[in-house]
Length: 233
Image (cartoon, rainbow, N blue to C red):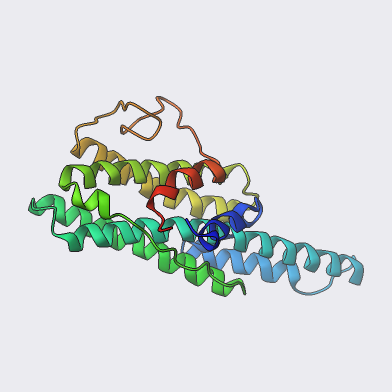
């Protein structure tokens, strides 16, 4: 994996940044996030100019860290969207219903990419570059391997979002993050059932309920280690 790809994921390591991402990622939540930022930076009050300056400084710091978090999520969504695009275009999935499911998930992941990319722009940041991926081995192995990989990737996505939940301070951002986390988890459940893994899996990234009653989160470093095989060197 090239250094630029590693940097794209590692630069997202800033905890605070992930918060604003989740706020902006979800339509009305995004509007609410901008509203809160505007309020924080807005007019002065009886507390005086010093308080206003302090609030503005805090808001800027928060926005900067949020950009890093959004870019982390954006990089992961790039990888997911590209995987599904390639899977659909490969023609390997012959079953009509399964192919339609793959297309639907591909569209959803691309919608996540578009939303996150737009969020970084609105925050005044530079969107993370789209990494080059390598799924040739998975695609060549046929539909069963493609679907098994898809199930694992979706469980990974859900665990990645969950891994940042505790770092989110804004309620609006948290709500937006959970809305995406829920979609990733539902994708994982549908795909795990489709490939016969059912509710219980053989690892933390397999099965509709791989961790039992309480899902286990993954840190950014753990997620990076798991996506490395899918990144072109």
